Length: 226
Length: 226
Ligand SMILES: [Zn+2]
Ligand SMILES: [Zn+2]
Ligand SMILES: [Zn+2]
Ligand SMILES: [Zn+2]
Image 1: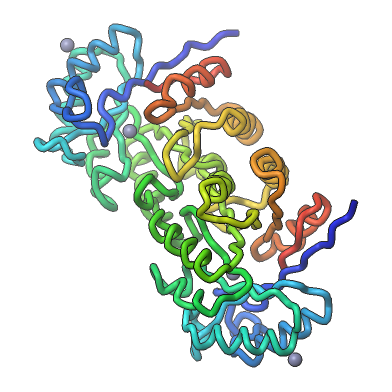
Image 2: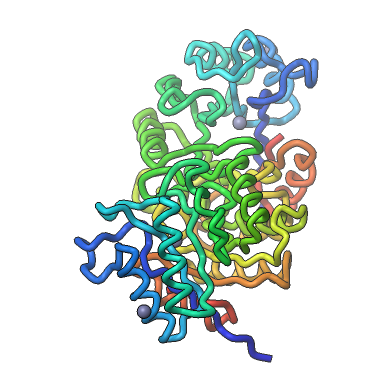
């Protein structure tokens, strides 16, 4: 039995700017055209961050609304996933656009270190973001920056805070969090199969680890994040 | 070849008070007597937190000094380990007593969730605590609340920020962090053997998981924390 490989395109992360790479789309119209190109190349999920005019990360619901409308128009059937990641704002700001009811949204379920700071996802913020996702019928993509986050995702599903079958993304190669380590990757896959065999999962390698981690993921039957 | 099992006694954690258990030693003199009893029963490391007069966690260097002096007098040869854990203060306060040069001190190398909040160990704080431990020749006990913390401990050892062979404690059973899961425990042991075979390790189960996790640890050749 084969299952289709879902390709999720993260057209714009929260860090690189045009100074790093002139091809990074940072305005909403650039993002829509870039997503359209990825859609025609086979991508099925658009993982979206938005930026302010100075290219810094934003959590502005108006920008998210314009991006969603454009992607829905140019890429019919594509799944729109909003990032609720912590670089775009603090606390509940991070979920202020969930009332736009995208198909999916990212959800971090634990805390960890980033290269220069703590990535803070306090238990009450996680609960609030999950409750907004239930309210607007948004499927979460759980961001697993460490092993306990997989266990936490399963716990949230078992007690009903995440009603849908979990969709878990392993994030590897972030400095001061989990390195891109094949042995850990294999154990992550084994852990999902052990604790929640119906779950779907994908893997993202940050920066120079992107291709390597995608290869591991596809070979092991997971989805791919670009 | 057998190696001696090190028993580490945490006479007073940072949470329970006499209202929870009238036998919890919370004054320095109570702590010294309690450590003495554990020493005579075979404990070799004293993991120490101190408390304020109202039993709340403290990082007061004077209390740590009195405790160290008492333990050294009553328990000759016992290893004194100070906690630099985050419940006793914020930022550098947590390491203000390291100039007392205890034999060991706990060192968290990553961040994670606790039952009701984020346990914050930002990269620059970790670096500063490690530098103080180098300065006063204190051996760190690395607290691994999640898998990436083991990888981080090995990285800190490899680049010289932790000069000594790592001594790693797996902490399991903290709500919203890593559960007490035997499969994870086995993988933790396998990970230490794979990445840093000379390292020593022990395991602590929180609350009702204490005995179970100690049994796993002793059976697998690790040390025990009570
Ligand atoms: Zn993202
Ligand atoms: Zn288009
Ligand atoms: Zn402690
Ligand atoms: Zn005594």
